[in-house]
Length: 224
Picture 1 (tube, rainbow, N blue to C red):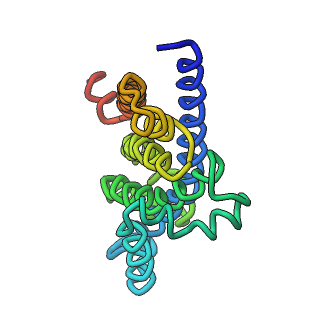
Picture 2 (cartoon, helix red, strand yellow):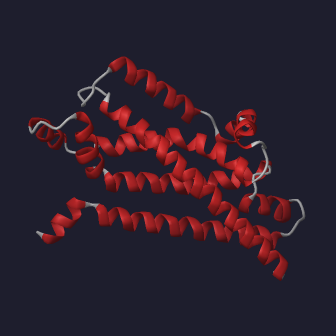
Picture 3 (cartoon, rainbow, N blue to C red):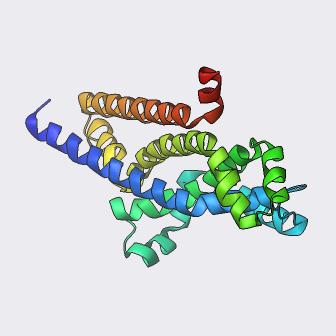
């Protein structure tokens, strides 16, 4: 592979990391509060509210029902409104974030559901407010699960970012399609696939390692 192609591959990798990094951070910032709301307003939970929970759940499920490639095209007017264009790395961040928020919310809800309800009851018995229970009990205890959920989201966004390349989103997907497919350069396609595999493996391993370190139950078992 030529030096020029290696430089293109490097630039595409940087664009992919930028798209995935920014959209992951934004989706976590917006999806985690939704996940907390889904959990605490559920049946038998801290702020049980059936109608609100069902409405929010329906909205989140609707967001998860739309295939990403359709979402990518469907929200082009919104993307233009936010970043002024529908092409390029900045434009791809918008649908990536919108598509990931419902997944983060559901994964966060599942992680929070794993927290021992006895801990919540004990905190309430000691006079903790709902806000204190959420911030000092639920989220800290669910942290390993939340990290695992976030890792899944990031890995999914790597795949989505490659899909965004099909419609001019930039990054590794765009490079693979333009040079590997349209210009019949199989070595470029192979290189893009290898980089994506290495990237996903690295992200998954780092997330798994961090989740294990934060798992208090595992630490207590090792000390016991």
